[in-house]
Amino acid sequence: MIPVDKVREIISRHKLLEKELSSDKVDKKKFAKISKEYSNLNEILDNAKEYLSFDETERDLENIINDSKSDLEMKNLANAELEELKKNKKYNEKKIKLFLLPKDDADKKNAIIEIRAGTGGLEASLFASDLFKMYEKVCNKKKWILELISISKSDAGGLKELIASIKGENIYSSLKFESGVHRVQRVPETETQGRVHTSAATVAVLPEAEEVDVKIDEKDLRIDVFRSSGPGGQSVNTTDSAVRITHIPSGIVVSQQDEKSQIRNKEKGLKILRSRIYEFERQKLDEARSKERKNKIGTGDRSERIRTYNFPQGRVTDHRINLTLHKLEEFMEGEIFDEMVDSLNLRAQEDELKNLEK
Image (cartoon, rainbow, N blue to C red; front, side, top):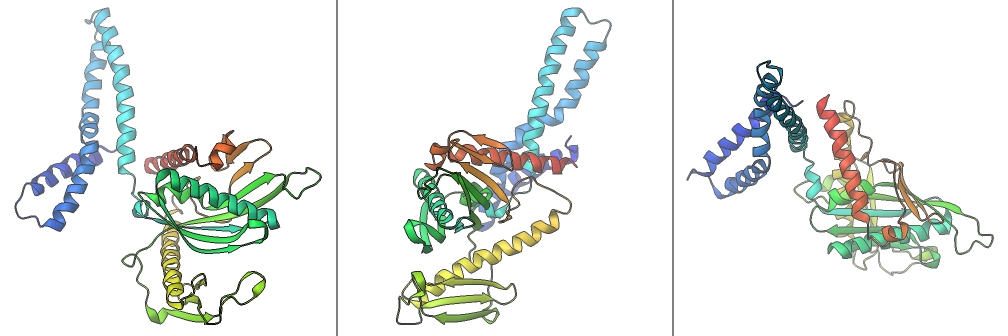
C-alpha cells in the first residue's frame, strides 16, 4: 500500500513544474532541469490520478454488490468490474512504487571494467580471456565503445589482468551486476584424462567518475615512477615511464605501464584511480544504508561467487537469483546477455520494492 500523501505529492509537483515552465522568468539551465523532471512525472501522472480514484470506485461497487435492492445482473457486472479494478490497482501501485524508488545517479555513467584471473592457474587466465571476449561481443552488438586501458597477458593467450573503459548509454546499469567471482567448469585443452576442472576469474565494474564527481587533491597523492616490465620481469623500456599512484587518504593504489609516455600512463592511472575512489565512497554510503536494507543481489562484493559457467552441461547459472540458462554457447557469444541482465534488474527492483514497503 502506498501512502496517499506520496501519490498526491506527484500530482502537486507536476502542477508546480507546469506553472514554472510556463513562466518567462526561468533561466535556460533551470528550464532544462525542470523539463526533465516534468517529463519523468508525465510518465506516471495518469497512474497517480487513477490510483487516487480507486478507493472511491471500489466503495461504490461494493455498495452495489451488498445492496439487497440490486438485481443479480447488476451485482454480476459490479463483481466483474471490481475484479478488473483490483488488477488495475495492483498494476498502478507497482508502477508508482518503481517510480518512487531511489535513483542511482551512477546508472547512466560509463563504466570501467576490470577482469583478473583467479584460482586455477593457466586455465583461469584462459577463462578471463574468454570473459573479456564475451563482453567485447556484447559491446559490438550494442554499439558500445570499448577502449583498453591496460592489459597483462599470460602464456597460451590468456589474461592475467585487463582494465578497459566502456562508453555508451546507461552502461553502468547494464553491467553493474557483473562484479564478483565468475566460476568455470570445463575440461582444459591440456587435460589428457578428460577430467573437469574448476577455476575462476574476478570481474569488477566501476562507474567511470568524472572530475566533477571526485576532486583529487595533488597533496593526497604519492606518485612513483619505474621502468616498465614485460613477461618474466624483463625491462621493456629504457626510461622510467611506468607510474604507480597512491591515494594516501584511502590507501588505493593504481599502477599503469602500458604506454611509452609517462604522461599518458599518469593520465590513464588517474582515470582508474578516480573511478575506484568514487566507488569506494559509494560503497561506504551503501554500507550505511544496508544496515536497514538488505538486497539479495548487487552487493558488488568482488569475493562473492555470482555465476558458474558449466561447459559439459552447456549451462550458465547466476547464483544470486537461481537462474539457469541452458544456452551457454549463445551466452558466451553475447547473444542472450540481456536476458540475464533483465532478470537481475527485475530482482533488484523487487528487493527495493520490499524495502520500500517496510
